[in-house]
Length: 94
Image (cartoon, rainbow, N blue to C red; front, side):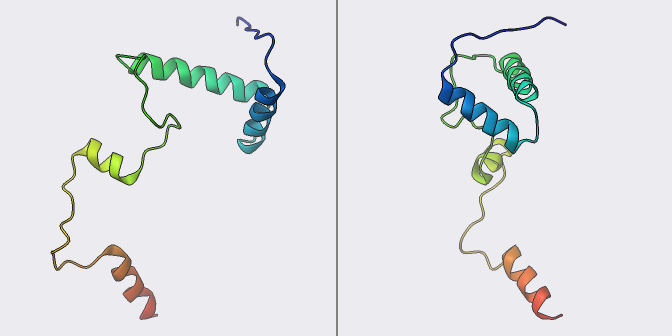
């Protein structure tokens, strides 16, 4: 397998990458490989890689997921109970 080398990386970047690797329970090498692989996959999926989303963390909010799935927005004037109310009622009956 080919090797890559990046020279003159600032210390603060290396420190952040090391911490990220620790958070993901990987070696620094494993973390870097994951970042490069994900970046390559994202580039393949994105028809216009020059336009980036405002939040590039890879996480979507509930609202963004609903918008992508084109789910109807819940209207405030409906009489349907909220899921949290159903769960709370069920918990309180125990």
